[in-house]
Length: 341
Image (cartoon, rainbow, N blue to C red):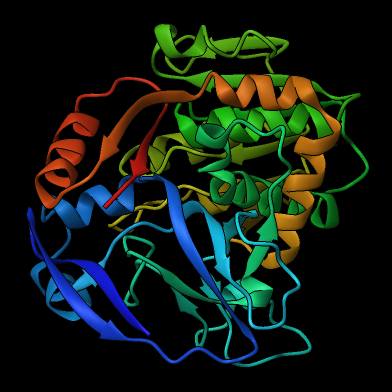
């Protein structure tokens, strides 16, 4: 099968390449329909990665958050037109201990391997998760990010002690909002506190029990467990505040990606017996749990639909460039492409 792949070849420059795809019985052919971008995509597009990283990764098709319609299934297990979430992590090995999203051998789309900016995606069938018909497709576009929140909270469940009274989230952006929404489903009896830098963004967290600006946290505020969802240079300050406000023996899940090393007050971590656990990306099982949570909770779907911040139909390379430029100025929520190339 000949396929058109839209690859970023250098910052702000896309080219279309025709690729011959080999399709076997374990594959599906999926037509991407709704694509959502994340900060990793924009860093590549605007050349904000190191020159060494850009040389190593490019040319490459961007986007790892997407849903699409099945157009061909050699086994006839999927009807044409079935909407599926596409799992970007593709393991090539199995390990009895290390999960697929942490195996160095796994291939992750839009990070060294072509993402979903393609005319068609030749997708291994175990990388497809059916999306219920009553899901809003713009919200469904970022199920991958929801699955990352599920991965983090699943790891919190398995790592933390029995104290679930107060869950604290540091970060008022997209990742913080998604994770906070999931906390209300996975830990329904816990009090949810959200800590952020912008009151205008914290106002979106109306379902939280309490929100705080990070420069105005009362000294007596304590959380049982915590999740860091800031990333970048904000990670260091967020981790330090978590250490100050978490109960002894608590667990902090670290989710934000930072390009540079950050300092951690290890003396306090040791003195209070804290657990710091890093999580990254997600697995097929996280996708399945994410879809199950969304299927059983219309209120969660409604909250996540509020995260759709900017939508644009894309039909050409110029449209793609315009979309990334517009996304840069979007203040709140996820940016979604209606893919029509």
